[in-house]
Length: 503
Image 1 (cartoon, rainbow, N blue to C red):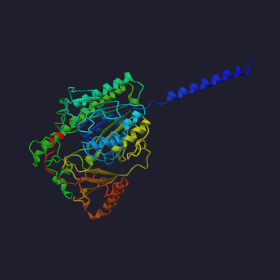
Image 2: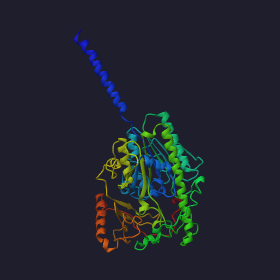
Image 3: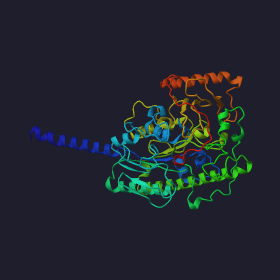
Image 4: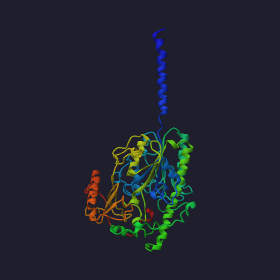
């Protein structure tokens, strides 16, 4: 037998062994995880069972927390829908992405996490409330499928634009209609591209004002007494603009998003209108929980649940009477705190994370979990290591920014800093002159309701100076020195109602 004939079987054997080993390695490599991102509008953590709600039962959302990670201290860096949504997508502060109000489009050229996943082979869809560009329901860049509407949408019978192809007005409750659209898209993926990873973003309207629960939940909380919160009357030592806001569109004695017909009404008996407003708000959250249940049930039935990262999140917080306010925009705790629950591959189960996480951290975190290239030059940070208990260098301080709006003249310019235990807020006038409003200083660890403003207390002068320095340092690192931090002139709190078209 020749030498060549003796080598051939050996070579073939080695090749087959290598092929089998390589095939086994490929088979063992996990598929890229899918992403289901559920974004609620104006959702307070206190309205979710997993965050301790005494009255709102959300078993499906709570189950996500039990099977994944609940972030106990998540904040938005601008408490306003469009700016915060832009931060969630891009990983940037508002002064960087440029969406400073609810009427500005997200710049088409800005990279964001769904587009980056699309570049990495994912099918991407956005279905629901987009809310960046008030009168534009056209598809946005970075998505294969896009269903939205103009403006805020309606709780009943919203007109939708389906992927730029047609307008339609399906009858029914918003929360369920948007869930139907989402499930239709997911089911289409199973037949048209079963092996392709997908990233679906679902934007709920709920629980944004004006609050209208569906019929089965209209009276769900009629048995619950809802008083004004204690902080509504703890206004001594706080800046005058807070008292001036009491009877406005954003004050507890004002119209309460039209739940109060005769206003201002400072009578104690007028709490019944406030109570009706809060009950309705809670009722809309129950439908959101039903939606989560339907989506999870489909993922389990289709065998996709285990390999899907599910994110449940709010875009900003909401004041419900705290400090005599309703709505958001301010830097007080109820306004900036948001729920964030994430479960799926790469994350532990049943963990609670206490570190301060920001809305703009979502973009780098999802890309990290999906193994996609990172967005460069952003300010958000991936919390993947933090969620797994291993990030000793995680942030301990961050800054907040909000610019005065002429359309909603009830909140001044705000620049503030929050650490793990302290918060300092100042209110720049906008023209370089000294601040016209008293600042606020709180020990949020010992005084989480922010009942006592320590800014003028000489015993805390050193603490105030330290926080002022931290704030200036954080702003300067972003190029926001006093001469470069541009903001509108604070024209003061006004009493007129906002235009009915933009409420």
